[in-house]
Length: 226
Image (tube, rainbow, N blue to C red):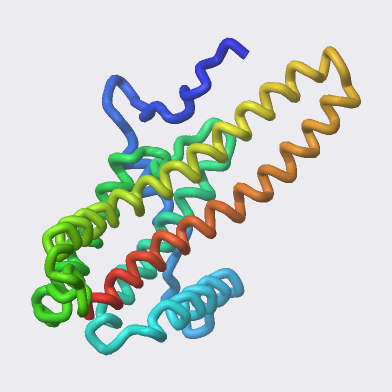
């Protein structure tokens, strides 16, 4: 129990060099491509799942928005696989790092906003000032809408970081309590072990849900600007 609670969130190094780039590239191995005429069951299931998610996200988009389909499906596959791999023992989860999540959120948000200003300049500017606003409230509303616009990428990154980090910390705490209670009270240890199993199952669901929520919010930002 003397182990640092946040030790699993420290960026791993090898010979003094960070290996987080290799960890980020590793999920690509989990999605093989096949040149065969008839695919095996794994690749067929993978393609079916990708088409299902892509169809659900792209339904509300016009032709310009659908040009982002490859970007969005790559994003949800990367975040989902990274979150799932982070649940393995002695592994590192890059999505627990706020800097990395900001590195994903800011460029995507900025790309969507710039697209909106290029294609729908008047509509994008109209978001800063709702119709029928009283004249004395115009400066205040413009400031509030501007702040809310710039908070969007921060909210994306913080939401993903907080949810993944909280789940890992909770699993670490319950796992440590189970180890201590094994020698003190085996029945209580069994109860905490069952809770740990249920929490692990929940974290698998959270890992996929957070990947979907992150990508869906980016998709909604894009829809508002195309």
